[in-house]
Length: 236
Image 1 (cartoon, rainbow, N blue to C red):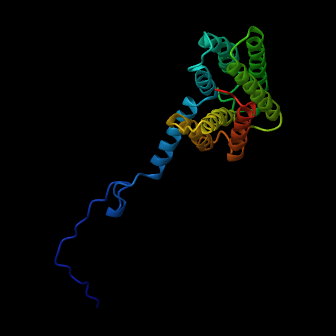
Image 2 (image 1 turned 180 degrees about the vertical axis):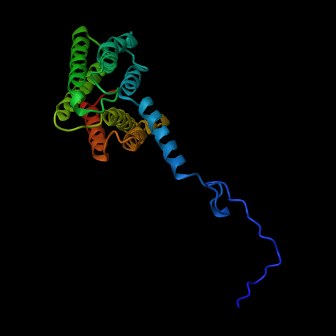
Image 3 (image 1 turned 30 degrees about the horizontal axis):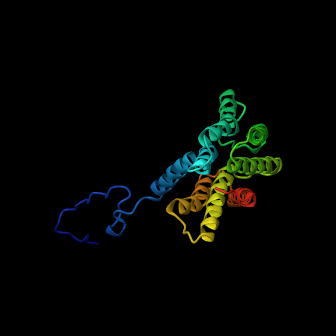
């Protein structure tokens, strides 16, 4: 005959801890899903703020800022409207018509027409500036920007390259050119130049996090952008 042990105290059921808080060592540590969501949200905003259209317009502002050429801002607007704004409007119209999936032109096969339009607009605008006697710095920028777009257009026929990375690389190229010019006169890098140099890192991280590009595609785009500006020796 077996005798069951008798416990003199009543059974007590303890409440379960809230989900995600199991033990003191993990208190206050963000959940991995929350970290991923925050990273993606940050990447989206970086991609929007540093999109090629915005970067191109910012570079134009830097080219003509403080220029001794009379009405330099008028020349910049004359270039920006057909060379930068028009291609962006074409992409928006194609998205609205359902011809392309999104403003980022995520599908490489849908990039051919928008890239060709952007290249032709840049070439025509640069030729018009040169013919009308526009500022030399602006004409040089137009040549570099046209060459950059033409190269991206050719590469896109076989491989998806990052246009965001190329624009950020162009900004870094301008910063390198400015640093070289200041180095020759005993100057130093300013905070704005440091930001331009850091832009490709932020943009590249954002494009990879959003899975819009692979690291190789971002690096290739950045290299093309830097080379286009530096080789043009833009005197700004």
